[in-house]
Image 1 (tube, protein in one colour):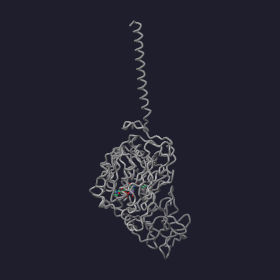
Image 2 (image 1 turned 135 degrees about the horizontal axis):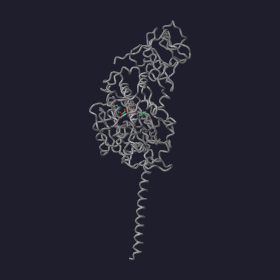
Image 3 (image 1 turned 90 degrees about the horizontal axis):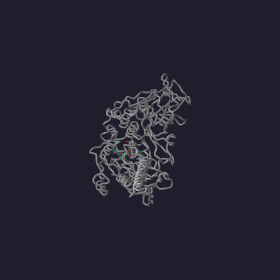
Image 4 (image 1 turned 60 degrees about the vertical axis):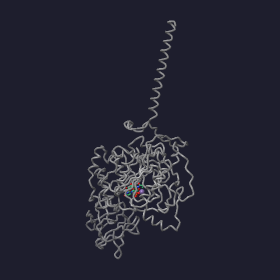
Length: 586
Ligand code: LR7
Ligand code: MN
């Protein structure tokens, strides 16, 4: 080879090497670029390191069925198929009534319906066009139960097995809260054997209540995600991927499905919300759970109406969360007893300590709303002197509220001031350790819509039993539902039905209800939302309770215990009232 040739060849080789080298660099750069454009983390980069998978966030393709959609099975013709109401034959009416008193739901009806029945697909049209990550963390579905009916419990299990992609279902974990029904013992153990370990059962050795039992379920679960269901639910079509995807992308998001209603008498499956209306969870100052239409401001953050949206709180029973995250938050406060308030505890804790809650329109789960609570609170119930649920609320508000908002709770529930709440020092320590934000931050940034329905409460000017001087008896709601007439009964000092509050703006309230008057008489009514004003004015000097709109006074009929408005008369003892605060002997 001549020198010239060698030079040319060398030059060529050099050229080739440079060319190949730059191609490789370009490919590498391209791959890198592709990787960084492919994975778009929807949250702050600081979360990125917590992701286990390189997940593609859910995406929507109009008109193209999503990757986990399958055709909705035809509804059979058996009882309750397709979620249509079913009535048991009249020959079994007695059995039906017995079931209702034992379970709070018509178990005879449920027993006739297939455990694998179909339900209507109530999702929004758009929901069928969403694609979710193919690789999602696995979920433990946790169902805690105490003396639940056989068929309603197992229909919950069957619906999960039937409508969940098996690769995402780690297990269904049943946690028995010390049931004493015979069929929930060996028979249940034998029954679940056929699921080859997919369904596990653990039991409490004493009654713990649903709150501690759920925490126990979380501790024992094997899935990366835990998802709680009440023991009388039916999950909807393609319910799981939309619930798990947000958590897979951000482990501090807790997700909640839209809850449909299953009728406790006919097992009819129907929506709770009007079509295309979106609600989120809030509370009123007595800590009753409430829902409110999604504020415009939140609605606008979404491109599609079918996308998840933020919610201040949740109803309690049905939600998914990263297991480790739940345990990092201390699970539920172990001091909460049996039932109630745990939904607020978890909600406030999540939001104030850096996480968030999302409601997911494309995930729907039906729940049987019982006619009444069929169980008592067992030994734990007698642990507290006074109402157990208020004890729980007090723990929650004393831990998470600031002093201004605590005062609203005590204004609405004056007796709670005297109630024990156990020791909350561990909860306060946790709040400190996790450097959680204060409640005013939560109210201003997350739950700002609460005030639109439940404004700040003015103090009670007078509260307690309302004694009538003439009759020596007390105003009493008789425990009836509004609208109902208010009467006069013997004063009993217990508070129930006789604890009235007159606030600085003239509203006379009992619990979450209000007192007003019309031609028929003096009534307990549903308070107008968004106002704390009312028509009443009390004059301590002459003991008259004025109804300012009619300029009349509250009085008792001379010969019957009927309460009504009459022209004011300072000399009439039947128009004189005295508020006597109740001091409970708890
Ligand atoms: O001592 C008990 N031990 C239990 O294991 C009492 C109950 N339980 C079980 C019970 O068997 C059931 O599976 O706990 C579950 C919930 O009990 P329910 O169904 O009697 O409660 P609920 O549906 O009346 O009440 C709602 O509020 C509760 C407050 O503590 C819980 O958070 C429930 O999960 C919750 N239910 C829902 O949120 C369903 C949707 C309702 C709405 C809106
Ligand atoms: Mn329930």
